[in-house]
Image (cartoon, rainbow, N blue to C red; front, side, top):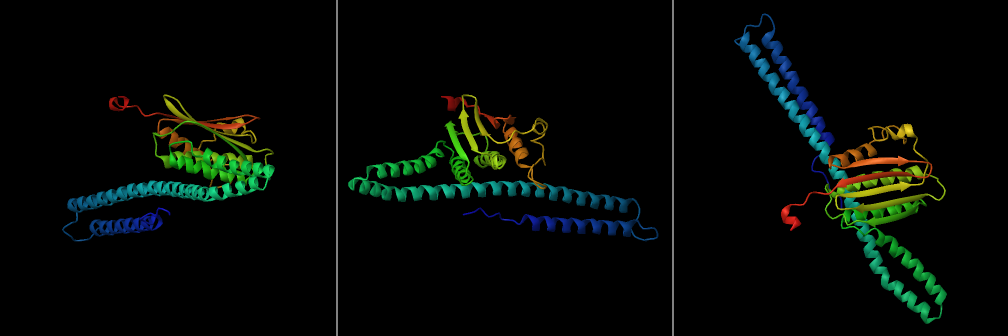
Length: 293
């Protein structure tokens, strides 16, 4: 299920442009009519000037309101896009859990039959394979944030398809993040996508994801063993429009860092010949006296 926006942003923008253009044309026409030399009208003179200024003010006010609404619509569109991704990932996770539950009894029956037939080595290999699949899924269920769990599961599955070995380490609960879960997912998703793209055809490609927290903050690290990011580029990698993926790209890292900073945190990068790591930290919300009690 996807969340469908209740407005067509492109259509709304077109209507806004047309309406504002008509307003401007109407004011210009009236201004010419009132102020044109030789027009004998009661509105000619100071009163006419006042009317023109008033209409200009109305048009300006309308344009400002339209711009504000367009900006809010843009923010809503970004939010809906993020929520759609989160819903899709959670749906995929739910399906994976249901499939695993459905298959569990079948796995037990197969193991029981192998043992009954005396095929102990085959039973052992079968159990190891099944255990690996279960362990892979359960690794992504270690936080209290369901959208983050769903994202981790989806990205681990994608990395497996791209022959990238993933190591997930979770030393955190993440149950009270200082920003919406979908925004946290957008940050992590951008970093993991960039890491997998950077790995490319790297031999023994490896992606390490670490989630942590302490008394004061939440933290994470996304590390890969791909090529080093040149020092010159490291200084500008978070700037809007920077990308090594071609024209029209390059907003992901900028958005990720701005999202972190808006929540009081930050995002940094470290790159060497051995690894490239993006690290983020978010301060924990201060507890009220009632919560501390």
